Length: 184
Ligand code: GTP
Ligand code: MG
Image (cartoon, rainbow, N blue to C red; front, side):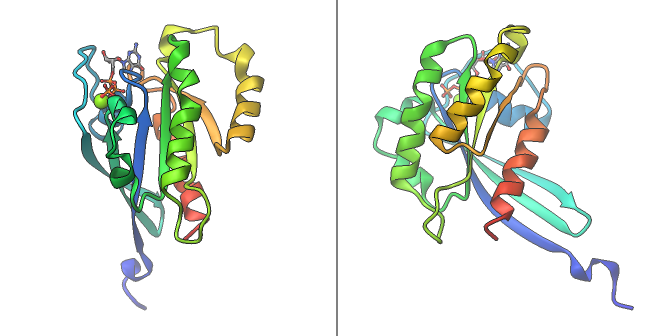
């Protein structure tokens, strides 16, 4: 019999993390990759990189190359460069600041205008309603509206997340990967 690992497959996926300033993109990445959280805010300049290696199933290893893009880049002209060859995306908003949700559509449009998968379809995109630890009740009543918003705007799904309390980060990453895998 061949060695057990002979069937193992490995994928490298470039995944973007975008959204308005201070919505928690860097915090989500830090929690996911290093299981670390800080209350201290230091704005990202340009883009930060992180690599998460995850066992997707018994014979699949995923190397997730996370591109954590500064919120202020929506007004810059580098996003086209940063988005190049991405195969998945998280768009993050802050549930305590409505203006960050209003900007989600702008980020999504910017993304879809600047990058597509090799087969021409839009990049699979998941919406993260971050800092859900700060509004314990407010989210559930809006869940149906959020579902509808996702359908209309082309998000595969949305999740309430908290980088602080480590809520739904692993789950949303797994979900995005499963969407990406549909195109492999
Ligand atoms: P830019 O790099 O400027 O685009 O911001 P960002 O989206 O990377 O935000 P960052 O991760 O730096 O977080 C901004 C602030 O929000 C920091 O003070 C974090 O501690 C805080 N924060 C991030 N996620 C959470 C969360 O889930 N809950 C709470 N309570 N605070 C959070
Ligand atoms: Mg940041």
